[in-house]
Length: 164
Image (cartoon, rainbow, N blue to C red; front, top):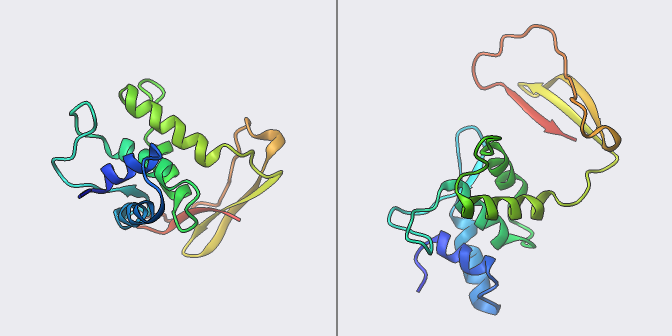
């Protein structure tokens, strides 16, 4: 009897379930994926859930475990979960403690391990109108890409960055 998505994800990530049980746990994890106002996605889980060492997992760790659990599940929003993980990284402390760093690194590799395409078109939009765009080239992946737009009123929730 598994009552929370974090534990379900941990079992799936460790390859501890197959067949019907695996499908049931995948559904439990998928249903626990929540979305913040800004559109970012993460794995939600109730108070009282602890990891193997008795500590409460962070949202970043739970999200990373969910990525590892759902690898290969076609309807899983892995890039959205991965974006949440990447956004939580700090150059001075990584993703947190050792366990969180380990699962976050594994999740990042699981999602973004493949080389990017030769060319990715990037567009910055405001209210569905493209205001700046550019190309991210694999050969120039370590270079900073600048997007320039004329002065805009950016108050409110108007902007989004998309790749095409």
